[in-house]
Image 1 (cartoon, rainbow, N blue to C red):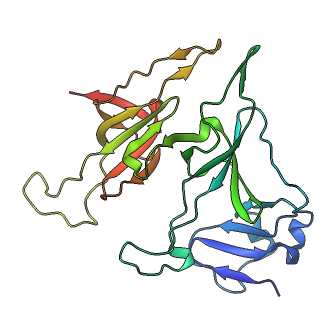
Image 2: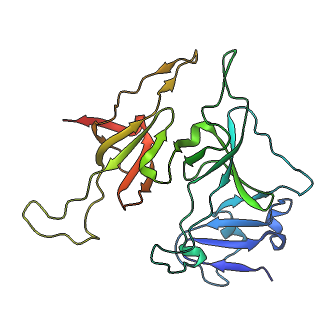
Image 3: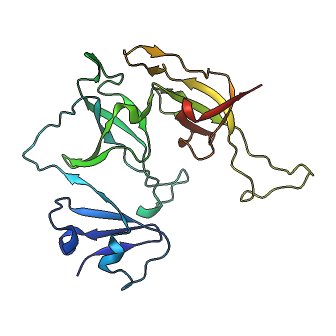
Length: 256
């Protein structure tokens, strides 16, 4: 019988007991779905509608991984197991990390006949896009192989507010949600609309043209901006302040 963990949003199933996934070597396959899954409600047809994310396991005989091109190998930071108050969190309640340490980099990005070195170095602490890369289990730890373009920024301190965005990324301090309606009615926490306005705290070095030259972004630090509502990575500072990191193309306007 396949071992499984069922929740409203995910399921983990032993791959050895799924004939339809024969040939996949990873030790487990994760399925993302919607709604509540009931025992006996899944058929072989049902699996075709589920999103599959497999974790590749590197055998112990291999002692190193060398990323190619503009790819970067990141050792994933472990998920927080306790709240700030010391309460132990169950596995499903632990937030998925979006950061880690760079342990290896490729030779760089090729533009025409020019190879540009990676802008991140080994040992750097980085923040990356939530759904980027391929997860790899190596030397008993979880790693991620992703393209440099999927790295949001370099974290130079232990507080997210000090992140240094890369390339075309913009780091924004999110404006606080309105607590009252225009008529003066007090809004509850749940009914406050998520703001899509904030102040640009830092911006990346710009995009690359076809010749490898940097093109400065049209957004500058200090600008108050309006951005796409569902874009970017939501982040929280040590003091609880909300930030978002997104691409400059997701900034729709500068307000003044």
